Length: 158
Image (tube, rainbow, N blue to C red; front, side):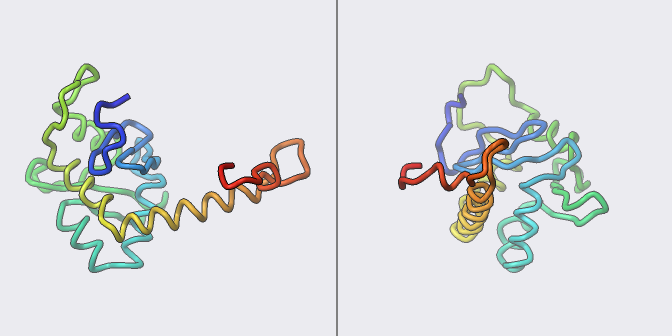
């Protein structure tokens, strides 16, 4: 468990498959695709001016490519080259190790994306996404059962 676990304005992990910041966990594949770039892309479509302010101006970009939506980062530290996938993961992990216990640590790229994910409007997007995913999951029937998952969760506590 990360020593900053639960901190809403902190990134807990960005590994070869997962991005975790605040209360959000999203996939990011080794090639830069996944749930995080998809959600950021949807946010960009819904609110282009705010996307520019909280993502683009901080070095983060989203590009639609043949394989789907992909996340990129560019800054002075990358010599303004767009990096994604494993190169981005390696760049982000630079200066960190598994034995780190002293937080917070400074990272321009992580600070900018942490700031973006705690923005009230992006958090609203996360909540809407969560509700849609929960409804989709509850409408499915577990393998071997005729009832949907929602039939098994009757109380407000699940």
